[in-house]
Length: 152
Image (cartoon, rainbow, N blue to C red):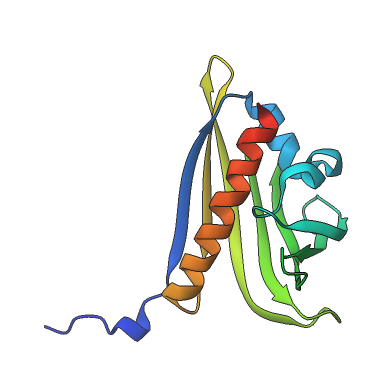
């Protein structure tokens, strides 16, 4: 019996969170610039530049500035935008000119839990390494903490 080679694995990331906010508002926070600019970045980062066209086939590109002043460009394309339920988009780190590195796919699924509560399931696949997945996990958890504070 042959066990899969560790190099053959394709790391994925799944994060589930429950927010004390209606599903429509959580969806709006992912799709409306007025909300996105307030929370969609890791802890202590800023966003000096962002362009977003949230619709199926639309694209986005943002500059995330780290606390040490380093700029990190990210961009992608929206593959699916289903109001109040699901958002699917590509995610790729880029250089300043827009040349992309490895691309992953992010899926945001929202479920109404009743009483103004929403379950968010975040999934991102596939990473080139477990280290890349783990680095993204840290950044996304901080970002979702920002969303929780923003919704409060």
